[in-house]
Amino acid sequence: MPYYHSSGVKLHYMYRGPAPEESSHPVMVFLHGIGGDVGQPARFLHPERTGISEEALSIVHLDFRGHGQSELGPVKELSIATLARDLEALLDHLEICQAVVGGISMGAAVALRFAVNRPHACMALILSRPAWAESAMSLPAREALVLVATLLAEEDWRSSADEALARSRIFRAIEEVCSDSARSIRGHILSVLSRPECRASSIAYLQLLPFSKCLDDLERDLARVDCPAVILAAEGDPIHPFGYARRIAQCLPNCELVQIAPKSAVYEMRHLQEVDGNIGAFLRSKFEFQACNGALASAGHIKSGERA
Image 1 (tube, one colour):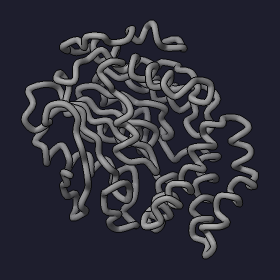
Image 2: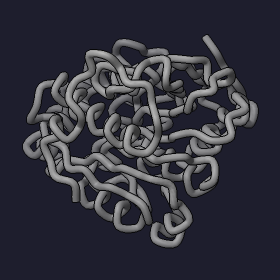
Image 3: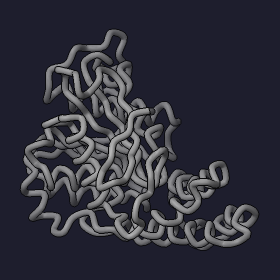
Image 4: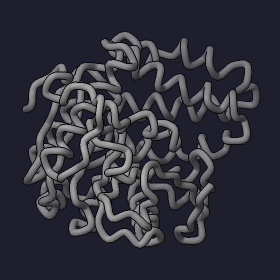
């Protein structure tokens, strides 16, 4: 498995398609959300759904520090800004001057921060269900994730954490509004139950990252990012508020906002098709790619929402 170092912390990454450091084709970095790993974004961007052949695009995924196969590093340094610097270090390691950058949830926040830090290195920006805008995550997200961290820190966490979360007021409130968000919150506990060696890292990032600021001044910072951008977001998600996506889209000079169906309202494969279809249509409208034979319909035929 390939690794690199950022400020002395050993971090894991993987790629699909042509090797990014050797490819003459565009490179895209697509990043996971809080509590995820490279396996989450690897479910997306498949050629039969994007309409872009596997040989035409090098896709890189990174395990953020404290996630997957990456080291945690100093806990006090956990922040969106640090994760963005880790992404910068990865592109430097691969000697990539420009890339399409995007991510899911927290990955979208890191991609956004990277685009502000290195606007000339960002060929295009793809944000899927952003959970950060200018400041921290939403209040329900912060409350729920801190509760998960508290429950995981209990001495009897193996037997009590999952049941205590299910009984909590905040979990029931989120579940009533958006079952998928509730599943995501519970997934943090289930993940540690299956991989108890990750417990300390999980507690650390759940305590700190939900409160981390994405940007200092959204309007001022995003005015510097003039690359093409697309944001995919759904209504009715308290962890990934549509209002955050709308606010970011209003501040980015060259951005499309696409409303997609809530994850809880569609089958998993339908969600993958909708997201990949929209991303594929966006990329094909901005860059020239070799088409993938047998690809599904373009995003205009897949997406449930309207471009806003």
